[in-house]
View: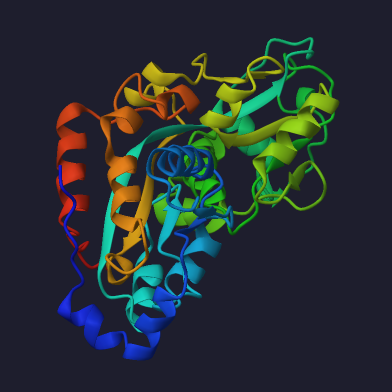
Length: 347
């Protein structure tokens, strides 16, 4: 399908001649954002450079939140063309873009991913955890003797006597990461809601969101930065530690790591796609339409990203762990990206 060049009148009004000239000064496409989406975009970038002869895009892993700050900052060569996200753009980030003059953005959902809790293949115990047990291990506050209090648990068997007497040590993403946002919403809130203390008190979703969102800071949960490869390396060095990251990183390191099943369900293409794996989420990237037709190769890069070779079942992104969209969803996505359809306002 031929990709059209579309720069909205609104974007042109916002982008001064000086700013557009600055965009033209940069030869490489620049992508920022989610560490989870990073390996997919990197794979597309390599394929694009090999196939077209354009310079290889600059692909940075800044975290979802950090990527939004850079992407929404404005129009010009100092601002990224694309940002990856392991959650949907927030209303506050959409407003940040509008305030920065980034008024035409196309949203592209590229597939799905599961948030994996992983451990070394050298671990002796066959780990299966409930979301409630994950919450009790990692939350800042939990029920203690009938009261809501600071988390006292230091070993897994204190949470459940059927679990081993091993120190709780879980490496995970920082607050700027979309993986952290998704983990809090999908695992921590859901695990908190499963607690008898919360159910018997009749606490609603607002109470859960206010009281069950904070990760503990006293040692058992370790913020490991935006580089998921560093978490993988630390798990390989410590057979009792666990790590939280996107399914693609587990998929790529199956020789040394294995999944902690959640409620008896292991993350995989089928369980993520059908939602039976409870910590599943959509993955996105966002396109700055004012940079289309200005940055060399941008349209061709988007065409490669939208190709069946990349996104379809059996494509090279599925080989890296992406769970593909349906054929109908891929067709709709491809048409929206080709025509630079602006996303609706987020309120």
